[in-house]
Length: 105
Image (cartoon, rainbow, N blue to C red):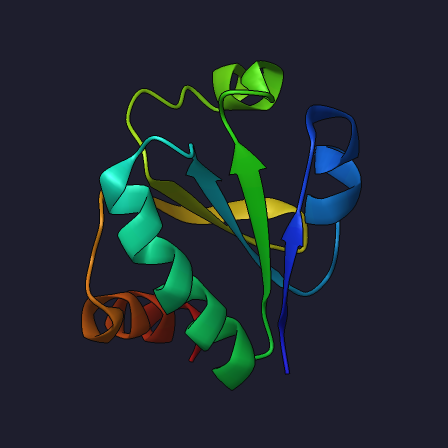
């Protein structure tokens, strides 16, 4: 199915300029809610045709700044290289599935 990849500032455009679904997870190691979302995103990648691109905001500040990330975890959903939707904050898997279903159905 899908996959989870770590993406740096220099790789970001390559990762999101795809005709597939890409969910970018802006996170940091010290962020408790980010650690809660990580396993949920891994599970989603196993169940759906989607790439989860993880951007560590501590070491990739350019990409975070480019998208105006003010709080983490922040998720941006891309399709065909275009932003479809974005969300900030941790959410249980059921809520995340519902959010993705609205766009990917």
